[in-house]
Length: 423
Length: 180
Image (cartoon, rainbow over all chains, first blue to last red; front, side, top):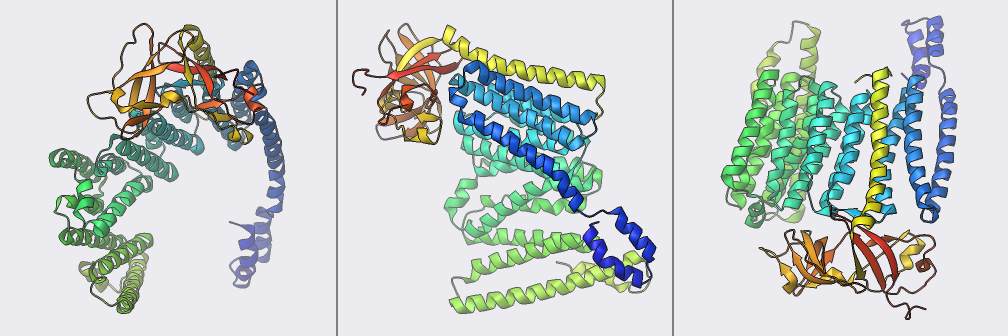
């Protein structure tokens, strides 16, 4: 709770008799003014500036320094960062300690790169930077720190990017290290932020793999949905949803693209991998996901898979676009229905937004060619306004009903019959 | 996943840090070993642009061997952009290496030949653009290149290690007499 909030609101609490004036003062004393904390930042800012000055002196003269000195500087700062990290951790200052350990890891990567550069040395495989990822994953197991778990995921993505762009190879080892190493670390200690970053990192690597191997981009969704299926098996619900977010967003954007551009057979042709191989792989991932959902009792989220319907095998043209639109509507409807059942406000908003997007795409798609432009925008605006009014009214009713049932007041039972008519 | 610094935890961290230091030293060792055990070749460059040196610590080298005629391509399928290739160079003592063939597969060089690995950057109608990852030359502080204003063509001494690393050993002016 912030002191500002307390200061502005507490007089009203006293006036209403919630707390006494004496209690209010004790509460205020409990949260000292922020100025004290800001002063605590000064040494940190000062040391950052000193560090930056040292860094710029070294960087400006880097090429003129003798080789052993350069190597010594790199290794010295590496050792100092780790030693400092351990020192602060032992004194109980976890934030600074973990920060310094993370700095040590970053310095290790910098040392590999700068040492190769020192000798103008090039390697033709990834073994040089692979060690960086290995050390990062191992460090994340040694400490309970969120940032030290995030770091190897980011390093893995960066090294993989370098490998595919500069060396023209995709390293399955790095992919496996991040997916299994960091993935297992997350599995043991679930966390929503780590889950999202992990999913994005893995999707990024999957996208690099697709780009490098010149495969059809739809193959991207096999690894992406594997990440999704892993979420289905996890016990911790919020962390699992966080892991499933990025694959779902990717699948949704893809379906949206198909609805917008699917008419041209040329685009749809870019998407069609060999039928049996692709559908077989997708079905295997689907089975894995369903088994996980069943085990964790989350079969209600099964309509997520609507987005993965391989509509692009249909002949391109208007039928494909319309079929995709139907899928988008069905998906938005399923999200709304689920939200109505659980009464979660965020899900309701999400479902509403998805519904509006589907409507807008449908409208643009189907009427642009037939209507006068001003009429087009007028009708579209009216359509959206009335749709938002209707959805908002329904949401309000639904949430009110949800509150009523959770409060436990027995009247107003007929609201349960509304469920069936949900979109 | 212990946070308390138990002795075993501390030992693990020390081992991990020691491994990192050894690894960096190993990279440095590979640099020396590449010179000591590698095959030495000389590559010529086109005139380099020295303007970048005002802002960066390296210059971009453009090797004459970075362009090869399409007829030099030896591979089962046509070359693709970003494909990794093996460039066969003919060498002779005290002379510049020239491209004898660009191969998709690894091969053993005969006497008077060397293989440098590279990547296809572009496929033109009659030529092939190549990249060797040796294009960035970090100019030492005492290099004469830092004094010059116009970029001369250079002669770059490269050593290729048998285990598949390569490094720039030294860079000289291609024609000492032509230099100012």
